[in-house]
Every structure is written in structure tokens, then in C-alpha cells.
Image 1 (tube, rainbow, N blue to C red):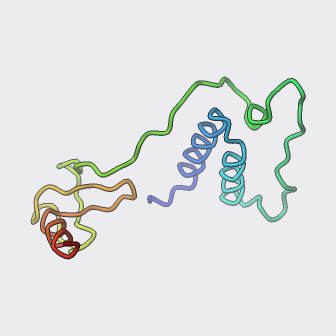
Image 2: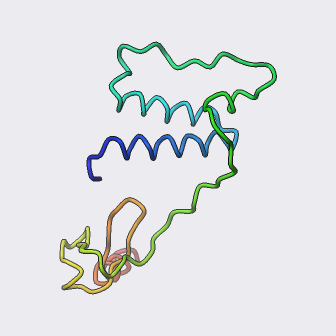
Length: 123
């Protein structure tokens, strides 16, 4: 969201390590390809390949370093931090005007008035 490529690469690498630890090597490889694109290495670099080692599982060969068991957190709506300067993503009013906001994992927010309007529409 900040446009910080280094943060994006760090987060993608962390997610790829989690996939690796969960024995999801293909998903980890997809994230590594995204990292290469961000680094500008996608066009001129040879395809990612891991030379199979019969002793080490394929997923463990994707990264160097210690393996620690990690679990992807469940993502869902939660109350937004009241100190956060945020706007409802639906009506575009600031939290100072509408009160508390519900935050989605995608970085969007919704106010109580928009929640109530959506409930009415879905009845």
C-alpha cells in the first residue's frame, strides 16, 4: 500500500516460507516468481529450478535457513484502530464523522450506516 518494494518482497518471502513449511512447494514457487518480478529479474533470469536432492524434501530446498513451524493467520473483519485516520470505503466519510469502522483484511473500511444499508439491500 505504501509502494515500498522492499516491504513487499519481505512479506512475499515470509509467506513463501510459510507455504514451504506447510509442504506447499508450488505455492511457495509462485511467490518466489512474484519476488523476482518485483526485483526486475523475471525477463533476463533463467526459470527458477531446484535440483532435487534425494535426502532433502523438495519444499525444504526452496530456502536456506532454519525451519520454524508457522501458521497463516485467519483473516477476517475486525474493528479498526480508533486512532487510525480512515474513511469508509463505501460512503467515503471519515471515521471522525461516522464513528468506529470495521476493517477488512484488504485495507478497506465500512461504517455502521453502510453496514445497515447493505443488510437492508440483502434482505
